[in-house]
Image 1 (cartoon, each protein chain N blue to C red):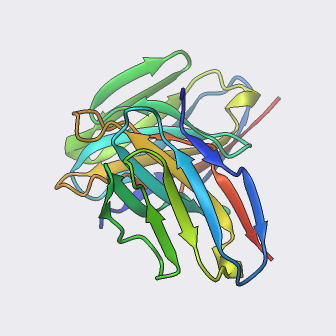
Image 2: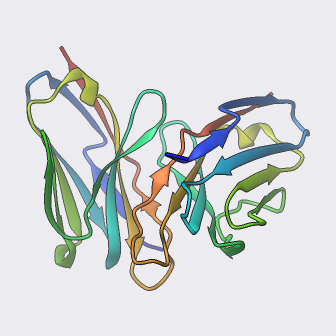
Length: 115
Length: 110
């Protein structure tokens, strides 16, 4: 596609439920990043994929958070047993990392609200 | 990890005014990007500028990597420039992870 696409745009869920957030990166981009942004803050790193593997997951806050990228393209961020503190905008970015170019491009984000 | 500080945190301008936003970082970087986050939350790429100077219309940016700072210049500001401006740096040494500052919130009044 022309840009990074994230679905859904908005998600409201009840505390304790499971949610999946999807990211479709720019075609051909090997690197994919997930970030979380709370109100008034800058985006905070969660996890980085290079191809299919999670090259760095040091930003995941706890084991309720998990992300996959099985075919090296689309990625899914999964949150189990959601808590109200998980409410934030989840941003995905992709880049041509590994091919000499590292400019990152972001999707429009998924606004998650846990009630 | 690397620290990224942006200043000022908030800025209010009258339409037509010029401004300079600053990004300081605590360690050597491979790359630096400036973004504009619009009122709908979309992060829009402004500059990819690990060093040197670039210009795009009313906006320009300069990164002095050896002194660990970057500047974003906005000239003849317009109301559509309002939003939050973020600097993100990729630390040297292989982490490959863009790290963001807390941003500068800009409001341009007509």
